[in-house]
Amino acid sequence: MIRPANEKDSEVLTAISFASKAYWKYPKAYLQIWQDELTITSEYIEKNDVFVYEREKFIRGYYSITVLEEDIKISGITLDKGAWLDHMFIDPPFIGQGIGSTLFAHLRKRCIVEDIQEIGILADPNSRGFYEKMGCCYIRDYPSTIEGRTTPFLQYKPLFQG
Image (cartoon, rainbow, N blue to C red; front, side, top):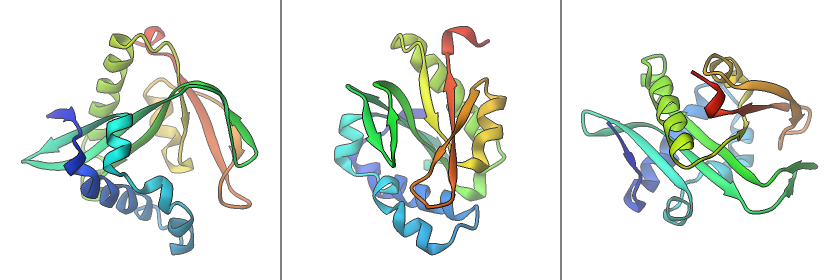
């Protein structure tokens, strides 16, 4: 079942964020650098569209859409105003069970209902193939918040996908 997140979910979503990143064997130093962006607060849930996937009464994954009201500069790049897939994380024991695809299908429907014509994604390099499989177009790599590392930038146009 997919439902909107509520402020009580913040600790579980934060734990899933960190566990999912750690799944890819990143050094602890990277997780410390990403601490602020991986921490989901109740305020974050209030300000953004956050949806959780529940199975057997436990949250197994989630995604969030954030809307930038104006262009912003981060790590030397400019993110254009508009909709962005800010997070999509699956609890590691459940990776590969179709939860990500189910969440992405929900994301697609949500974009159509909200008339979001395009959504930007700065993805983890390990997830690029997943997003391309979902119909996202790879645009280019951008510098990461980790020196010497890049992050793929993809775009998704829900109205043009099947």
